[in-house]
Image (cartoon, rainbow, N blue to C red; front, side, top):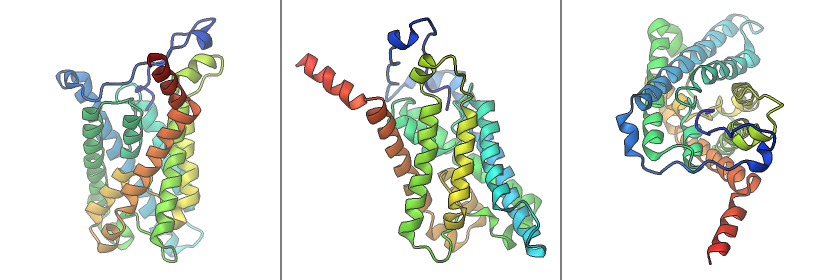
Length: 281
């Protein structure tokens, strides 16, 4: 997430002299000739695999322990920490290689903001989904009996909630995450507030943590289509597939709103575009 936006040169008058980096070309075929591009795709695959392996294993472990002892296991708080903590670790590890997206919704939001090309966005999403499938597959291979018994870590709409509520929860939760990504990696902010160093993976990880606390009781918390898709593929039960559209549509809508809000409202992209149009008229 951090790599996709070029930082401004630091200087005494950085905030005044700052220029927005040019948008990434929609199609950049030259990327396909570079090893760094394929290295980034591999990094997204491995990071998403590790993310799903640790987090789904945590969910299943909690459910197995709480069945014996209601006070046993890590609890919802521990599950939220597992998701948020893994995002913090993996974004920190991969930010300099792939940008550390680990989430198709994040990739989609950055694509809409012209931070990544279409080719990169598509291959990142494919790598993330494949990594998620492999990560959950490892969990099932290591704990097959527990895996099936305790729901395979699949995202499903909880009883008592309608699909509209679930969709809304996913939209708002993803908005919080992607908005945090844009804010934590904003090059203008880094140039202006260079005296206040921001470790981008930290607020991003915390965003995942707090969203999980709020939405685990509703949808189990998706906010990451690859996470929901990987678990559904391996678990392969009707309920998980029936609700799957919520975990794609919701995060993509939330990411699109966050991209629009940050780029066109907070960064005044619409005003700049209008000013440019008037000056050329």
